[in-house]
Image (cartoon, rainbow, N blue to C red; front, side, top):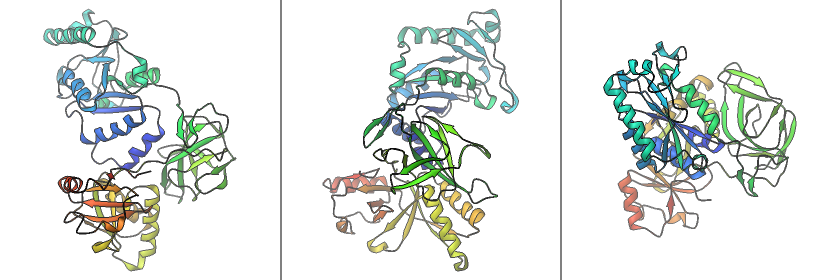
Length: 442
């Protein structure tokens, strides 16, 4: 939920079957956490929660659970419970297995924190906890057992309840417990929505969709990787598929798994697997690759940026490098571009969910394409898409608020940029007949 995450995070959520939501035990729910949660909620993705930094001063665990339930409107079931917090943090109690996992600090989490297993009333556990902490923990666990609901796997898989784990990632404590629980309770690859309805993973024909693009991951080569989520059938190297977006047949000959700078050739992959397709410039985010041309997966959604700048090339001598680099980054979806109209005709504005993305664009333009760039801030902070039934020509100064601007995205969809939430609400109140949305209309 960090404020500087990118829209890439949103897109990746379209390719997963379950997610782990990490919450800072001191800060609780952050603004971006809510937005990411909304994306998961729309898709009904099972969510597992890890409440982190228990070895530091924190909110009360009960307060954190209440915040999750009241803010995100999702039920909680603590799989384990912290034995104290901050300097008093001594481990976690597993409510299902009735066991204690004791915490020992490690330097920067270089090694996995030692874990010993015993009951809550074990003399060693009592010796580790102060009387007040042991009493508080015992009372809290009794309250959860009496007042809380039973662990319901169906509710978890439906995305209505989130299993909650506590720990300290920096000390590598509780992480393994989380991962073990994630593997135990999460679901296998699920059917994916397409124009033909739900496509089950056991369907024999191969199909998948591209959800992420990345260029120049290997600094020694100007390569380009398209990441595809396998949805059905079996992927085999050299398989012939159709890109339903272009109608062209393509042989997928160069396929890898990617972990950091490490790559391994992939000969086979199955539903749920992620495969990196290297070197093909014909792919775009949202493309469906399939043996059955009638299968087209739902488009990857766009999300409204909250930060806007203009980017210019200060050196005309390297304009081509600047333009080529910027086009590549736009194709990857690092930022979005909008062409403004009326008083701003000819101005291109670049939008991002998190402001760090603008620094990424300028850094990559310089490091990968040797192109200088200069950015200038704008006054806009809110964007909404306009329903296609609205005549875009009416979106001019008399209609939209002072300081707002009309334009279109790269697909030609009409948008309005507002200077503030107040300006947006003023427009909504004045013109209820004009339907707008924070995602493009389909």
